[in-house]
Length: 441
Image (cartoon, rainbow, N blue to C red):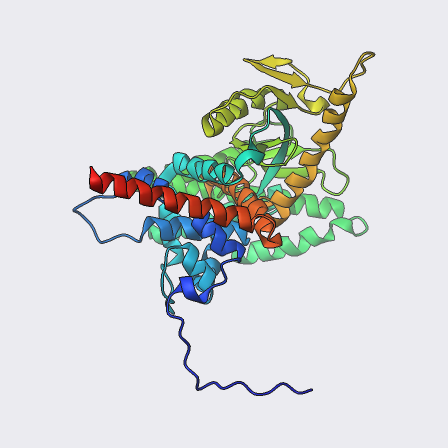
C-alpha cells in the first residue's frame, strides 16, 4: 500500500537536542559519559584570561578531534559535517541546532599544537576510563607496527627533481637570476629516462639520471654563491638538506627519503606485498581479555622491539596508575624477560608449560587484528600530520578513538543501556543529596 503523505505544516514540540535526539544513540551516550570538565581544567592554562580574541570552547575542539578520528575524517570534512549532523553538535556541547561551521580547519591544527602531548595522553586516558572494568587486566599483549607517512615512494630521481624545483622557487623569492633554468633540458631527460626497460636503453636512462643529479647539485651551489647573508640565514637549513641528499649513497644509514618529512625512517618488514615501509615505529599495548588499548607510543628511531617496552610500560603506569604484571609478546622481542616488576613472556619450547600460559600466548595473536583496525578505520595506515609531533599525536588519537568506538558498539546493542541509565540516575540522586546537605550546613 502506498504510504499516506505526511502533514508538513504541523509544528513540532521539540526544541533542544535533549528532546530531539535519540537517547539510545551511541554518540548521545558517549557525550554524557565523557568527563568534559577535566579537559577544561587541564587546557585552560594554555589560554590568556585578558589578552587576545575569544577562543573557541575547549569542549568543541576536543569533541571535533574525537569525532574526526572515530569517523575517520579529515579536518576539513569533520568541520563541514558538524553543521549537518545534530549528534556531532551535541557531542561538542551544543544545545540547539546551528547551521554554520563551528570553526575553520586550521584552528584544529593550532589547537593540536596548543595542548601538546600531555593533552592527547589525557584524551587516551579518558577513553580507557570509559571502558571501566574492561580496561583492568593484569595480563597484557604488546606488538609493534609501522605508521607510514604521507610521502611518495622515494627514489633518487624524485628527490633530485624536487631539489631542482625548490631551488628555482628560492631563486624566484630572492630575485636571483639563475644561469640556466634547465626546464627544456629536464623535459628531454625525462623522455630518455623512460627508455630503461627498452632494448639497450638502460645505459641511456642511467646517463640521464646522472645528468639530473648534476643539475640539482649545480643549482644548489649556485644559490649558495649568489644568496646574500640574510638569504643564507633563511635558507641554510634547506640548502644543507639538499647537499645531504646529493651526497648520500645507497648503503648509507640515516638517509633522507623525503624533503618535507626528513625524519622518515625505512623499515624492511619482510612482507611479500610491501617490501619496504616508510614512516615511524609504533608500539601498541592491549588487555588480553577485552582488547582495550592501554598503551600507544610512537618512536622516532628504528629500534629493536624489546627496547620499546620500558617506555610503553611507563606510559601504561601513567595512564592507569597500575603496574603491568605480565606482557605477552612474539619472538621478535627477544631480550630481557623482566622489566622493573613486569614479566615479559616470549613463546619458546617448554616441557612443563601450563595450559593457562599456552592459552595466553595464543591470545596474544588478538593484537594483530586490533592493529589492522587501527590502520584501516582510525587513520593509522597513513599519517597526514607533519613532523615527529604529528606522528605522536596521530597514534594517541587512533588508540583513543578505537577505545571510544568499542564502547559505542556495545551501547549500540542496547545491552548496557539499563546499567548506564541506572548509574546516571544514582549519580544524580547522590549529587542532589549532597547539594541539600550543603544548603542545610
